[in-house]
Image (cartoon, rainbow, N blue to C red; front, side, top):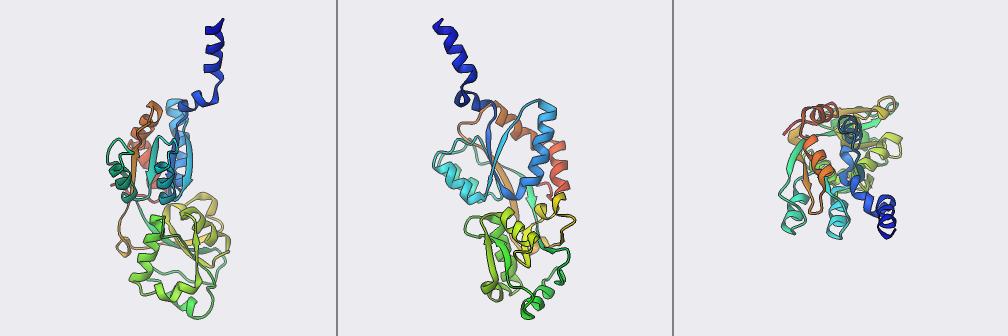
Length: 251
């Protein structure tokens, strides 16, 4: 009887069953691509994963504080290296995609888009831009890339009084796509999201305007079999094809 009760507890306990569906930490820049990949993963394997999205810096802090993630998909390799040094990961991680940056505004915006941002500078000088959205460089690699672009094109000082910082790459995109900000430097993968196609205009920016965005993933110390399977799945052709559809290039 006692054994029977224990079996029921094991069967229905949400805590003990949680490991069947691993929680994965992922940079918000890969959100829409990852939604498609997790659907394909379920179709191919019958298994599910749960994703927690935020900036790479915030997710790193959560992992350092003991959050029970099993796999971490960062927007760069720097945070992975930090966790490896702190012995939070199984290894030094794997680059699974290379990210790009885009300039984005709403569909009906009068602001013109160009690759060297001359038109953006003119719009700033004309007073057409009140708010300029980027992700927060303090904890978002895409925010760092946005700052590098603005610095390289000598716009960083000009935009200071106009900057609105998204908590992560997705929020910066939300600001620019909703019109809360007149323009934004955002993750190209988010600009390509189907939900935005009728609402925004965007332009892919040259990769040499910023340091490479090496999207890196790593298995954490408490990883289980499903997380390990998903880690391998992300490196296979089907997942890589989905990533390519969202503007990522293969490493």
